Length: 80
Image (cartoon, rainbow, N blue to C red; front, top):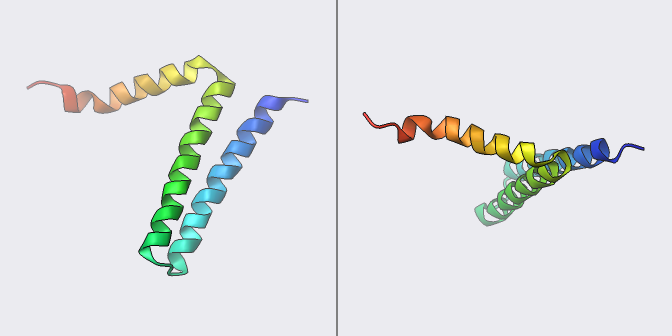
């Protein structure tokens, strides 16, 4: 059995469930405090899923993330 796709699917399902919870919490009208906690948990779940994916896929994902951030922030660092 292939374990990499299963781990990646579980990480993706966790992220989708976390952000679905954020959406439901928002539309049910819970207080700002509870909604903030749910959003923070979803953000942490997303970050954890990213690092799990990076660990499963290897170092190239980490290098790609660094290159992507460098490309995105290039206009902010350019000197006129």
